Length: 259
Image (cartoon, rainbow, N blue to C red):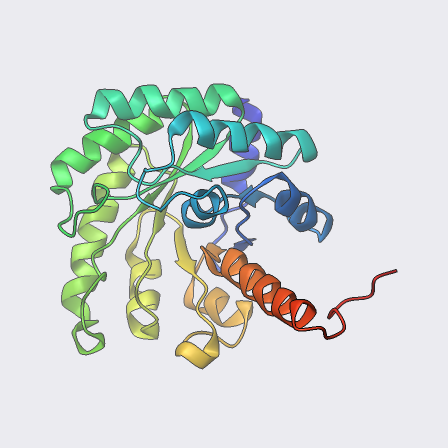
């Protein structure tokens, strides 16, 4: 397993970002793998919603590991799973939960620095202990930093960049493999974080229509090492399904080739 973890780690190259088109079950994993993915990653929102749960660790860890097992049955690619806040109230509990995911075959996890349902960030020293417990299992930890969450766009500047980098340094010292910075599309902030971070940086894809990016190359030039898509693939698939079902149930032709 350690070789597969290192294979996954090596895919995080600033300026040549790994693209993760997040999946929610074995079927979506197979489709993304066959499209040419270099690695597979779940998104907690889509995984939970696909099983009738809400995001925020309401989806039991045992069930999340069952989803992981299904994904691993259809692909030999490295698989990272979104473990939200680490499925543990303490660092020790996080370590036990992450060890289960590693034993089950995951090579990487996402881990947030907020507890489920909480707006406040976990104090950096405490979060570093949680990251350390996860990383000490041998897992590649994509340490999410929610400094920009809920902040108005006009506040996205040097102060939030430095707060992000402070946490990034602490997470790096704790053994994290990468730093995940969502909730901003400010190019100057992203470039400054990518330049100053001791860890390769993960940016979530935002479409140009929402103030996001024109291409993978744009984020590559800012220094990103990883681009993830979060809940958007699941949401787009569900939107298509709902619209197709409405057409068919209204008596129109289905919007696909029935073969």
